[in-house]
Length: 553
Image 1 (spheres, rainbow, N blue to C red):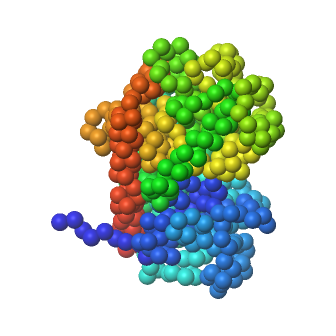
Image 2 (cartoon, one colour):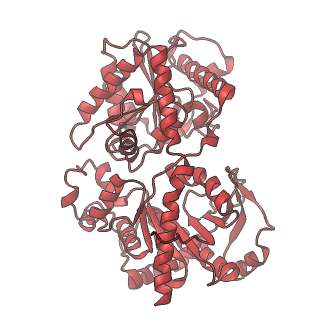
């Protein structure tokens, strides 16, 4: 008979993306918060960097009355913090900490990390210092709060996300051993680097030595702190079996628990509201496309989008573009296709000529100059997407059956062109494609299917593997998700299959489209946090038992 799970009395979580909307980890934490807040009402505290200081942060609802006595104690100890709530569903408690004061003791902290855990920070550069000082500051918050408000009789868990929080996780492990520590890597720093440097990752995974590769790729500090955290916390976790194998080989540590990323249904409109939002999104997308290209886009235009981090190879943006190029000459296409690349690049400003056209609201029959991009970039000559479009002569000519538009901004509702948040635009897509090479989980395809948008992903995506496993066979577009087999060397074949799948979908009748959309939504329901949260409870139990053994000894 299985022992009853140990349940924490209090949960701390830290991440660089708490109240700081950047990418997938923000989505993980912010969508899961409501489920945890319901289970542990105000016994959940998120800790993030205070990057906004005196500026208003729309994601942070400050509350000066929260934990007044502790805040006073923390301030006397030199902690500069602000308390309040994260402005997301569930509105969990949050502390934002100013980590700037700790730079002056950086070398002392790195020396202690070396002596205590063998963390090699000697070759640190770039964002390592900034992340580590935040990580240390977050750990001081945990220590102070625990000593002041909880104490040894309370079962507490501290979960740290990504290498950026590892230094602090190790600090808590040593200085507050009563707290059970969990470290979650969403993607190993060295695995991402190997893939991003165009080296074959998967066929040679068994042969790579993570520490050796870190030296070769100038990733020693990040890899070292991540590896030592994986080996020294009470519970080491990652987000998929795909990344689990990567951790076993590159960090020399098999994850103790796998924590797949879920989603929260509250983000998706229902009924008439869904129809209304979808209609508005499509209208805006097609309006921008017309104003930019001067081409006519009918209501049955097939809108295909990709999005996520701007990792040209890792996220399969190169393959998406190659598929677009091949689709130009695909005689099987049954509808006009508009392909959107929505990845934040080095944006200078929205295009004023495009803004002027959108403000007038007319229909245009002449293109703007460079009708492939919605915003001005710094150093556009160095941009890989623009480089591909230009080298392949893809200029969105009127007669072209496939138009490609690069949306290089963060879609937060204030981009100057669409003026709509990402989810409000996602709902208008007909098809989403994420032909990733390196994708530990894959939030973008999960978000797509949650908004009833069938999507295409690969067998190297954690989500893709999960989708096929859930269905019980290789998942196809009719199931809501098409999973294309991808390896180290078949990028061209993936592009060909992606192009063919787009053409096949363009020929779907209304009944087939509706079925694919229903199946996409049904699959997403299996990944709701109410189903996936149990894996977190397993991790809490695992960590608490390890901490309990340590204290007893």
